[in-house]
Image (cartoon, rainbow, N blue to C red; front, side, top):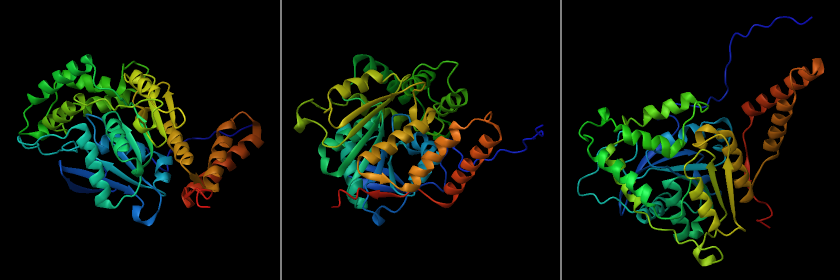
Length: 380
């Protein structure tokens, strides 16, 4: 006869942060001056000068910045382990960081190509020799332009909701409408900024697609509150949107190696995302020998709704670039599968097996970290 067990407490070892406010301990921030204005760069992970591995460089989508787009994802348990082996640099488009001051009236906001040139300046500033690009939406387009202009600096591109074409008439109309409304927002009091309802709904659609009752209610409400614009400068966002809708076609041609990416590319989108067709179109223009297209089910904002699946895809993508995971990580993965496959109805031996697997996994997580090394074959 089994004894009753009372659950008194549940404690997570590495919680996934759902706050969209910046964590003081997670980033080292610095402003970098470029030919097209200054921008904020946030760093985390290991010191990039202490390794020969490429830097993971991120670029955010419209309405977001490095905090609201990437902080929760990199606080995901397995991504925290990855940070012990890689340096991560987050680039914010000019004026898109939290509580940013309004850009001057005489400031010419950079075009998408000029935003890509800013990445080159950041690489020079930090002496970065190569990157793995992780971009979302507008950020994916900017990283794509950088990879086409400086192929020797890019080892791989992991692009989410990417587009390779110029804006459609429908997108142009809705974005122009949002730009008009955002320009009407009072920029003198950023702390009390509130975006027009039309802009809020557009940003929700842009990132989540159609919101149904089955979606994560807390997550949806968190971003709905964020898109009221209390920490986002409305005028600065309108300038970034205007630059995005004026983007030119990337000029990718399947079958023409001179007009395509030289590095491996993974295109990722969520099944509920309104940008699925854009990623399909871009995939049709890429070299099939070095590109992959993936669609994750039951999500639109993949980094938030399916962080585990995105982390696994990113990890495998990095492995494919020649940065193999250690025996510990392979062991940790097998232990996880073992613990998940053992159910509570397997009897006493099943309980003991599951308990031992989980305890061993927790012990490994607490005492070791993912160790990623260069491909030994490539060094021969």
